[in-house]
Image: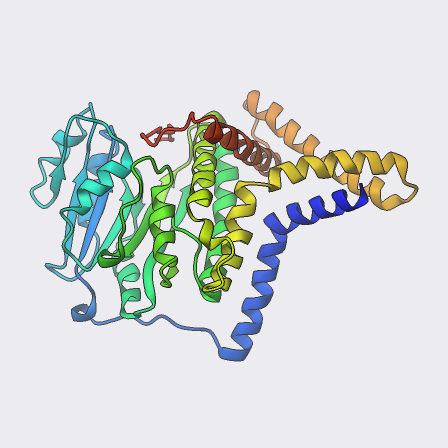
Length: 391
C-alpha cells in the first residue's frame, strides 16, 4: 500500500508540476552551456509563400470580424493566400465570405466534420507553407511572419502558435481556469521547444510545411495534434512561436468547457493509440520523453492515480503512526474542499477567483476519465461539436 501511495502521488506530481520543474532546470543548464538561441527575422524574399486555411462551421457571428482580422495580417505582397471552407454550415457564414473576392471560398451543404473540410481545403493549397487557424480566434498582425520565418531552418517541419484566452472582470471558473491553464501550457511549450520539440500543436493557430502534410484518418478527433505529431515522427521539429498568437474568448460556462475537454480527452486516447511508435522511440528518444511526460500521462493514467493516491493515503493515515501521511491526507482533503467550494460558488454565480483553479483542475481530470469512457464505448464522433463561447 505504501508503494501504491508513493508511486501514484509521484505520477500525479510529476505530470502536473514535476515535468515543468525538470524542464526548467534542464533549460537553465542548456542555456548556461550553449547560450540562448535567438530566432532572427528573415528578408521578405526568403519568406515562403503561404496559405491561411480557416475551417468554419456556422460562425456568422464571428466570420466578418475574422475576415477583417485575416486581411490585416502583414506579409509580403503576393505571398499570402486565403482559403475558407464552410462545409455543412446552415447559417450565413458562406454567404458573408462570398462577398470578399480576396478569399477562396469552399462550401458544400454536406457536413462531414472539420478534418474532412481540412482535407478538401488542402487539395487547393499550392504554397510552401500552410497556416491553420480557427474561425473564432483573432491573430496578431505579425503572426504569419513570425511563424514562417522558422522555415528557413530545414529541421523545422511545423510551427505552433500561442493560444491566449481573453478573460474579463466577470470571468467565471471556466474562463479563469482556462486562462491559467493556457498560461502554464505556454510556459511548458516554450521549454519543450527550446529542449527539442513541442509535442503537438493546437488548432487555434499552427502551421506545417505543405510537402510534409499528411492526411489523417477521417474519424480523427484531434486533427491538429495528429497532423503535427506525424511530422515530428518523421524527424522534424515542431517549434513554438509565442510572438504569433491567437486570441479567443473562453467557453461560455463550465458545462461548455467540460464538453470541450471530454472531446479532447477522447481524441487524446485515439491519438496515443495511433502514435504508438512514439511511446518508446529509440530513433527519437527525446521526443518520446517529452511526449509521454507532457501528453500521454495526462490523457491516460494520471487521473486514476490521483484517486488511488487519495484512497491509499486515507488508509495509511489511519493505519500508520506518523505525521507525514496525516499531513498529506489533510492537504488532499483541503484541496478537494476548495474545489467543491469553487463548484458551489460557481452554481451560485459568486466569483471567488482563488477557488477557480482547483475547481477547473478537478473538472479537467474528470473530463479525462469521461473522455476515455466515451472513446472506448465508441460514442465520440469526429464531426464538429462546438462549445459555446463568450461573445
